Length: 490
Image (cartoon, rainbow, N blue to C red; front, side, top):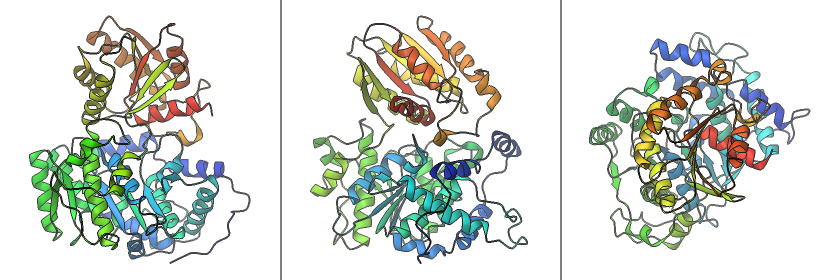
């Protein structure tokens, strides 16, 4: 179903769209109230998402034509989505347009909605944004069924972007799309997808416990919620045993099976587009997902095998080698310094990223710098865990703890405005001072600094000494995204 609307929304700019979108963010007080209440996502969240879909002129069944690959997990789901998208993109003749929906973004919100690997243009983002906005503004819902959807209300930030992605991909005529789940699976906004062509679950771990549960079993139950009736599902080797048991149970509930995908031997012969030896696991899962998707769309006659010695077509190998994914095990040479960036912010992702950094720099004689930000999770625990994965092979000469504020002026880049953190804590550097104090217990020989923003931290680091530096940046995607914006100077 295609909605015909004018190319330009008169008087509306990209900045207008971003400001309107930012107004849909949940503020810190609301998030804290939800956490303290103990209320977790429930079925009503999905029913409301279906209703928002109706109000923009679609039925959820309309999305089936997008031939969606749906991916969840705690760690690696974004990389898996990127690998899958890149493989599908090698079949341009049969699939001229591939959509990719991921979160969060690094530098610009347009990164969340990509076509053929490229973020949506500002013009198209603005066009489709206001088509959705105006539809929602001019429609209403029965309050007896949807008491929270009062006249003039809008869906939250992530829900709106999910609606925008579906609308964009349909209007642009995408032949297949890859969707990364936001949080969890069962009650995630993306889970209104009725008939995906394949479902995938990357590594399970403990995160977002206030929404998903405190145990690996509860989290696996949520993640397995994306499984659909008779739709092939895939996961990785070495899942936690308790989590794998639940995934199999959830698959049986949906009359499907979940296939465990090994690391393919063929990956030892190529250099993946995303660095880090652990990415072979995500790349292998992507191979299985892309294979199933291409078979469902009759691009391939049969799916590839799922044994270690399975032969991979040249298109698959090319897609894996050419995958681009900023902010994940990314190396940037800037002046005389080398920056190693990863948005790792959970125990599992910190372990993977820190192992990568340690492997790369352990023989380097350059002074080492850590630039770290984490505003909401247990930052003290994360820095202890990170150091445990690096020391004693690598130790930091300098350590800088910063907020996720972008600029020295105290402002955020417009696409990086965050209302989800406590403003007072950020302004007073409360978290940064706390983890700086904690770091001295870990390594009292490091020179420790606290910075009010990312631009200040960057200038501080670049002025530390006359020597070339190896700089490890981790703790949050907000930090990595803000740093890339500062590097761009925009």
